[in-house]
Image (cartoon, rainbow over all chains, first blue to last red; front, side, top):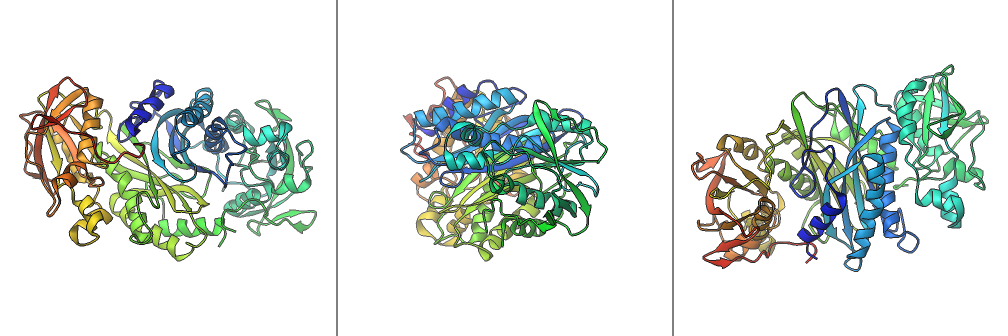
Length: 297
Length: 297
């Protein structure tokens, strides 16, 4: 199978490019924006040996996770997915069936979330390198950002923490499934406006480092004065520093009507935003070190 | 330097995200479309050992070329660049200065073309992997495509062919510069409307394979009955099959007013589109084999 035949095969699997003027197969995909919409763009690597292993992840798992990571960023800003682009470099040994299964995993999630596959790039490499782009849409001026948290806001997280990290260490059970097939919190992100959320981001690298980033961007500090919602069996270290939970971390005014769950996901108040000392996160008067995942530490 | 400090450094170098609502540093970049515009999206890998070598390409060359490849796709559809996203994975040995030079090479080209750096991703890997996304803009319904060539159209190319391939083999002179620093034909692409161009694509993998792709997409055949504009010193094989010239290949009605040069680039009529036998390209009655670059042959 040469490159053109492979692209043709992917185009057939992807189906009609719903919502797009022009999809796979040309120099560019073409999107016609709707009146009053603003567009969100995120790009995320998924690299063999860094983000996944061939020995534990099927091709379908890799395809699913590549897209799920991007969708989680769209969820964090309250967006609705519009389309995605996928760049995939693979070793010569992984042809035919691996590629089919990769796109099957990706396209199943794409269909249920509205992220039409609109294009991408293909190449050969020694290890699997995937880079995904997702475009999402929000009503003009309504995107949730991470640099807009305010002093006295309450801090919340969705779901339970540490599950993905626990799963990675045990390789089994519900925790492993949480690691392998994270659920992007799209409906929750879209519903956060009603709660008057002031800032939001997704938990991709661990609460300690992600909350530090939110506080640094908003030039505020945080006090973790609430109880953390722990994933069943996870340690406190896994809940504080474990990456890839893909839950949402958000802030809202202290008197905002935040329910116990929203869009089917439990919400827990875990702390309070304070003035000053940008990026400092405290727990019981001690400064929490940002020990979450950092590619360049 | 950790990941946050590195992102902060890139954000400072990139400057204010002109034309964007929100740039580097959040889960997503935010773009507010203008009335009446359609958006073009392209994504391109630049991989060490496939598209470039550390021994012959400086970090600035790599940054420049990564963006130039994407801009060439925008040019091929007649678009004006709006912003770009850059995913970069690098070995631990290439820190600090290499990264600075990479972004310097990329940002210099970004500034002169309007492709504001709006975001991306960072990771570590054994070799350099770069994936670039470029967003361009066209007036609604005016994007040039490759699937719209018509029988009896004349076929044109811009510039001279085979230079990049010649440069790759000699490693010196004007040809090497053509390989190292290709000029995306943005102004030419934007001017092609006035010529009533019917179809267009960029020459990234070689005339033989790219013309075959244009013909296959348009369900037509082609006859190379004109003289090829040869890059000084290039062989006929380099002109027919050599990749990475990043010139434009386009079609226009036989009576269209195509000048000898446009936007400072010479234009040459090289052939004619014919009905039927989709994807077949002939030269002197012989079928031309698509020997240009194919990642999966």
